[in-house]
Image 1 (cartoon, rainbow, N blue to C red):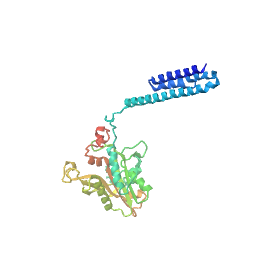
Image 2: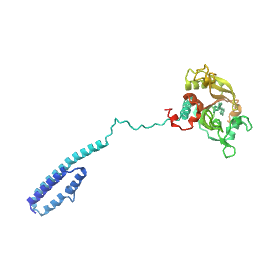
Image 3: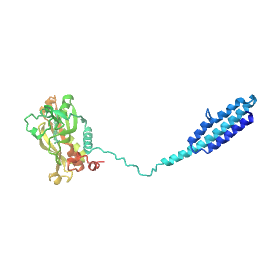
Image 4: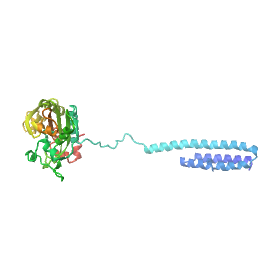
Length: 346
Ligand code: 2U9
């Protein structure tokens, strides 16, 4: 092997390599050429194996040529690579181009169930008066659900409450959230301001205004010197916050075994404003909840001395509150999971 021949082999290799680099259709071909020519076992390496056969004074000359050749091929690779990668990116961008003007797929956002929304709204209003929300068990014992609420076993009020008993002696599905308040009194010291929202169960024939499971929110306040006036003021503020600050309210005598005295609490008819209409059966008023001063017997069951502490309590059916709020006339709609109905509460 002599210098001229090796130099020609190197220049031929350069020209062939640069030509095939410039003709490379894609990056993959480019990388294959780079490996084939400049790789450790590449053709440039193979050609340079001939250097050993050269006279020592010629080797640096070949080395210079070899470096020039490697540089030329590397420059061609970089140039062609940049162009190919650029166009490949363009092609991918074009292929993946998203026409941002095209309308996106509507993401159907869920909404709170109207009953949950109503419970949260009620809890928010009473929360502003310092009422803390507690949860009570849905499977209750007869003692706490009835007896401690001044409803002894043979009390007529029981048949008022058509109860769903479970197959454990003395246990039932709670007919109201009131037993939860008993548990609060037994575990908390006054002053107590408790809100008990939750699902309740009654053995009811289901129709537009009755369901076997429904939601209640009950409230309890116990402290020294609690009065009926406190109760009236609080409920008046609740009704105004819920239905409008211009709404008038009133108490009417009522009866509950666990409160004495007991009242029904009315707000002026939300349809006719009090002049009388079918919605308020011409009374001009709508009853939204019941309330009263906690019966001393119940305070005792709560471990509280009725001589020292007084309390008031109230209870409302959430479906009724939601009905008045949203002018819904059939509470079965809340249970049927019909998105046409539920979708309206966005
Ligand atoms: C304790 C003491 C007293 C809770 C009360 C009512 C009046 C009431 C009804 C509203 C609609 C039931 O769902 S409904 O039919 N409830 O009117 N609830 S006072 O009285 C209590 C509760 C717990 C310890």
